[in-house]
Length: 153
Image (cartoon, rainbow, N blue to C red):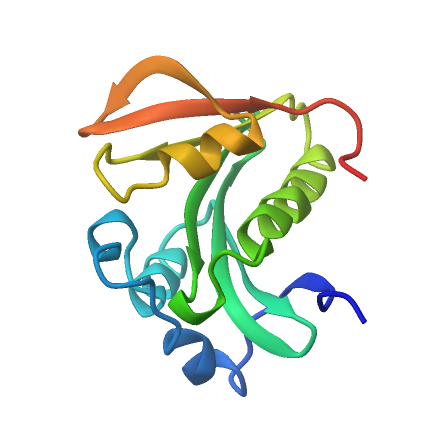
C-alpha cells in the first residue's frame, strides 16, 4: 500500500476550521502566512484561487495562486504543508497539481513564486522542483519561475 493520493479541494464551511489549524514547523513561521490570514486575503483579492491540499481524506496543507489571465501571469502566492506531514512528497505533489491547473489557464507558460531568503527557507524545495531565480527581488523576496511545458503526468 503506497502513499495516499494527493488532491486539491475547495475549502467549505465544514472544512475551514480544520484547514485553519494546519501549521508549519517551528522556525518556518516567518516564511509563510497562517492559513486563516491567507483565506482572509483571498476573499479580498479577485485574483486569488485557493485550495486545501489533501492526502487521501486527510488535510495536509494549503495552496493559493494569484490567477491573472488578463496579464497571463500565474503566481504561487502561498504554499503551506503542515509540520506533521512535511517530507512526505505532499508539497511536490501539490505544486504539480497546481501546475496542471495553471496549464489550463489562458496563455500560461510559467508559474512564478517568491520567498524570503534565509536558513530553513524554501529555496532548496523550490530548486528541486525546477524553479529558477529570475534575478528579481520583490519586497525583500527573491522571485523564481518554473517553465510549464506539457502536462506533468
